[in-house]
Length: 184
Image 1: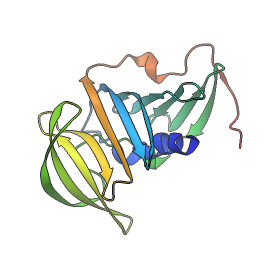
Image 2: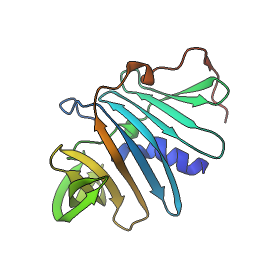
Image 3: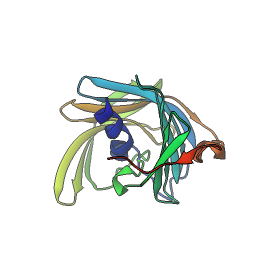
């Protein structure tokens, strides 16, 4: 489960990408699956910050990512938090075009999260390394609703997407939390 949480907070990168020209705010239910393990939770998003809340057997997991400060805050259940550097591969991808994209082929249509989407096979060149994945884009809102590996080993999808202003307090460490060092 810990590995899946890492994939969710770190690996959400390929799924969600920020472009300054693609400024939007939304909240949604997010489901991420890697192999047989799946996690669901809530995401709150602004163009330079996002918050992910997931339930787990150890209690709720909350990660606040701040591009403007280049940090991620991991909120712990005992009113403490850990600050770690924001990794470049964590930059969210919600735009219909994926950074590094070199080829896109429409392969069909589907319903994802209650929205009509167009399904694409997308080839990426990531520093000379080729990667192919599927992407489902809602054409009415130009929003990436789902990404999945070509072999089906992982996927991440949104449901109940609400495009609306997100309260600023969601992207701050809550009052009364104490910063603690990262334990190895």
